[in-house]
Length: 451
Length: 170
Image (spheres, each protein chain N blue to C red):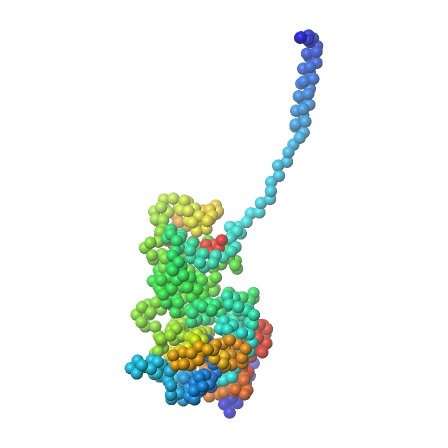
């Protein structure tokens, strides 16, 4: 019923778009552009490699460790009762000496799958189930079955599409990363000859920028007076660069204009001050890197109000050698997403105008490896050669998106990891023009078209 | 035994000798040489610097230029991480260099030395950062810029060179 209502709404919106052409900031006007569905989009790469069994299927230990205990440890994102026994995913109970014995309180009163639409069985359908491969597919809508690390995505990222066809500024697009390992800093623009750096999004790995490396190399950097000293530097640099302004001879900047450059520097300076006085907006529990990263992501949202922000996580990947920590970090990743959604609703302008998408970059193996943790629970890799690593989910919530809607099931998988890019393009009214470039995975479709 | 030569014979020998000299000297005039000059293509200053330094190379050279000593391995590692954590490298380098400029150990020429001999200062600065001498146009522009701006400091000049595109290339 709700699905029918959504389709009706979408049809009416489409009809309206046909009669009311929409002029994008880039000046594009035509049949390939439509009014945006959402003003802002936040895409959470719920990354690290998540098993369906412990996430959307809510099986807790029942399938992973052959213990008959089920339950939902992601109660900010999913509706469902938590486990009632062998609680190991929360904060450590130091009084009773129980590791992970105190579950984290939910942040959201209503789980996100009740506020939005869940695709519980999506497929990461091609290529190896590696982190960079998955992240790259998430931001480019394409698979690179032969691409290794240290290479940028071969086809354009969503940042490049939005900047090129949506007229977005560089500071409208941010990749906030959990770190700089695994070639993550290469995900903000592609190696495609027709796109690339001129259309790239800004990138920041805040736990590095505001951690020890940044403190030693950026903190308290000198503020030159903008009208005198900085203007002088810009004049001289313009002269010095006159023979080095061609592509390939520049320092790899991202075409932030002067005001954007100033704003980024001010953001860095301001955030260092917040770090110093402990006022960075962090989740209530912030005992791992994912949670701190999401806290800094909220700072980015507050400062820049970007049209698109992608934020990734990774701590779940500890599952290679420690299943208990995997459960704890999965529970914390859910805490992070709940916190992020709550904070978005507190930002003037973004509240009520932001769509959030959540998708793991790939799954994990069905069979465990031989490593046991302190609870005698087996660990899991994402080694491939089994369908379980290809099983993921997608969740979207925001204005105009039906709540409590599930699309697909275990027996009827619907959706693909490459769908997020056309979905974001759809949200910004650019689906057709992006699709027309022919650089997406051929089967990639907007999730709205999967319903 | 001596041979007696008559005056007439002497005249003939002299005539032959003079004629021969004129003849041979005439041959030398007729032989001329063409000195070829190889074509030289005049290229801009960026023609030989088309390779980007790695970030490690850039930081290492930058640090040496500003502190007159080599950067330590741990400091280099931290600087590399900091640079990698920011997507826009111009912004990252700007912040790094301005952080260095706040370091009391940074070694800059005095403003007085720049004012006393702007040409030498410009030549030294080009040599330090670009490993070349300025062109005449560059030299004049820089000298004029220095002389027309009393508030200009060597720090601002060094900052501009350190964060310019040419300094990132070799």
